[in-house]
Length: 196
Image (tube, rainbow, N blue to C red):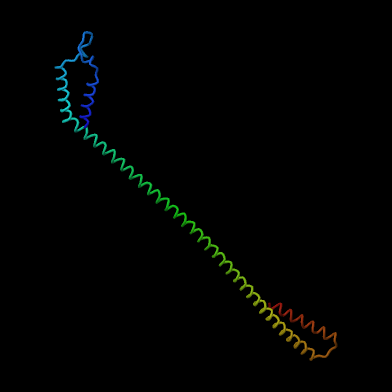
């Protein structure tokens, strides 16, 4: 194909060359002088050289050009494939990143809700324990008060009986009775203070 193009171009060049260049004239240089023998031999050498080049040079040159074209096309195809892979991986990475963000925000929301629930549970438990402690303290105070009242009643009864038994033993007037009861109470309080 290329050889045919080259031959056609040569024929056109020869056809459009003015005749004055082909004609040998007096003032012309031998370069532009047309000699039929030289023209035939030049054409024959040209075609012989063209045949030798066609047989030995054009095949390897065209094979090298074709191999180079295939290598370039292969590299372009590989680059396009890698570009597609990179785009796919980038999209997958973006999707995974969005999913990770979504999961992280979900975990944060769950953690916040769980923390709030734990805080509410702890507050409720502390409130219940505090209320129970207050109730226990009230019961303890009532029990202690009742026990103190019972002890006071018993002591009052004991004191009254002791005072009455002493008064019964001796009959005195009211001033002596009062003095006697006060002394008796002082003795009891000293005895209890010493024992405590």
